[in-house]
Amino acid sequence: MRKLLLLLLLQLLVVDAVTARTTAESRLRTVAVDSVVLHAIGGPFCKQGEVLFSVASGEGERWISFFSRHKVLGIHYVVDRRGMVFSGIAEDRVANHTLGWNQSSIGIELVNRGDGKEAYTKVQMDALVKLLTGVMSRYPEISTSSIV
Image 1 (cartoon, rainbow, N blue to C red):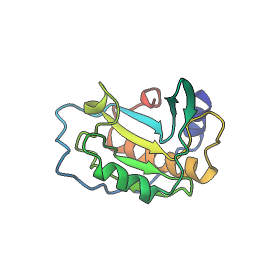
Image 2: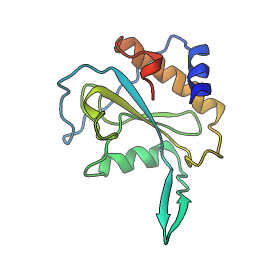
Image 3: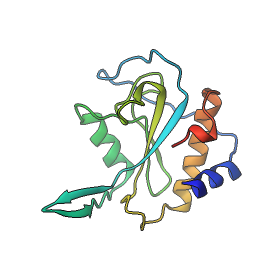
Image 4: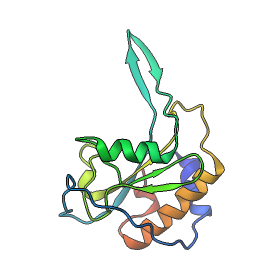
């Protein structure tokens, strides 16, 4: 995580804002945005007592569609392995992506297995830096230490 933050600090560039959509299921925020939560689409799960990792393959279109159809989960952005950024729930609305942090955070999903072995692509990291730079310019309360 420290390496990622260092990479983000070194690559901060001026970026264009990414326009997000609003869904009927999301609600307006009532507190200021002060953090960003990064997620890997994949991650561990247990099956018959064994820890496995989901494949989490596919492009951003697949995942933004998944989140837009989900009855509970939501996300503000998906960044796929090609470096494409997809908008989900508008930033001024709450996305259900992290219990206890939803109201005050922007949620970003990175298409990745989340197993610690699959590296993020360079274009994916470049797109993430550009996206984070834009988000941080819109929400000055967000510092690099509040990107988790």
